[in-house]
Amino acid sequence: MNKHFVIVPLACAMAAMVNFTFAKEVNLDIQLKNLYANRDYDDPAKPSIGSWSQGVIARADGQHALTENTALTFTGSVQYAKRLSDNKHLNDIILPFDPINREQASSYSKVAGSLGVKHKQHKISWGEQWVDTPLATTDYSRQLITIYHGLLYSGQFNDQLKVDVGYLDKYSPRNEEKFRKISVAKKESDGLGYIDLKYSALQNKLQTQVFLSELEDLYNQYSLGVQYKTQYENLRLNTKFRYYYTEESGAEYLENIDNQYYGILQEVGYGPNTFGIGIQKIQGESDFPMLDGAVPVLSYINWTQGTFNKANELSYHFTFNHDASWVVPGLNVLVRYVDGQDYSINGQKGYDESELDFIVNYRVNEGKLKGLGFQWLNLNYKNDVKGDYTENRFFTTYSKKF
Image (cartoon, rainbow, N blue to C red; front, side, top):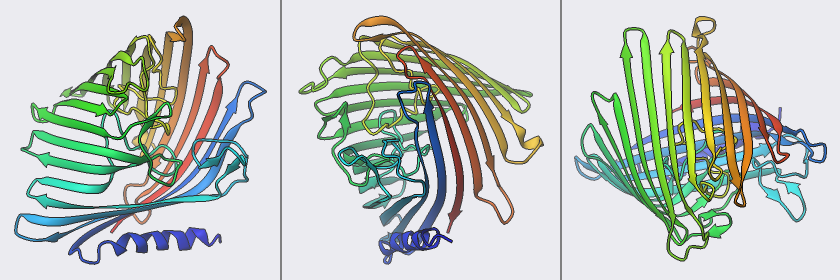
């Protein structure tokens, strides 16, 4: 047996506990993740990329009561991944890559933590932040996780209203070890400041979100999200709407950034089946900006690998989800297709792209193997600029909370 499969998880768990020796309440969450990924390009001149790796993520949080309503809080995380496949000498955006020596890292790790104070339903913390905002997100679709560093206030004012106010000065992208300044198109920003308000109503059937942010010297971004879920006997309805407005700001290192995003997706479910149809539009002469390090925009109505974020792009989205628990408990199948049309490159319109995904998820929800999960993603992407490829990802995960 490879010693890393035993030693590394134990070392991670022990390291995560060190920061909490003074905490009276400690929670520890460990996830093992085995990932095989392979992308084959249709262009013979482009070799396939990918890797096989074993990872572990250990996260702990604790608190030490000061008074009845006030406590010191602590968090800590250790992430580690070991490459199991041969070095392909190509960048797969999963493992760290040295472009000079053209080497895939044999292993890599991330270590971080935070300190804070909690009073009733209000908390302020400094250090590592695992955030999920319309601009900066935490993505679990690769091996290790992108994490951020900064100051964050989070307050639950009542059952309906939650407010986050943050300033993030650094981040560690998913295929890097160290923290560095947040960047877009290799232009660095001193920090991301934001206000994120979430409000629910109608017995949580209606979820709304207002997001205001400034990525210093790059752009300001504002977002509005609305989601409404309801049910009529056996018929389920889920409506998603998202709007973004982005404009350059400060020193304007990215120059021409001025676009809007509109998206709406309607899902209809009956029994084990859920169908979705949606439309998404990027309005403006520039692509919708994204953080370097392949940080996804998970607040899109239907985020996919192809992104469909090009200037002036109009895309149509179709999804089908089948809950196959009637065959095997915990089994789910998702098929989705996106057709992107008439996007622009350097001001020239008329380019198209499309993506067809097939995803199978299985998770054990009870018994001795509870926490064990499997996922297969088969992705077929095509565009007009010789970028067609087929990608397969196989995940084996195991999660345990203590």
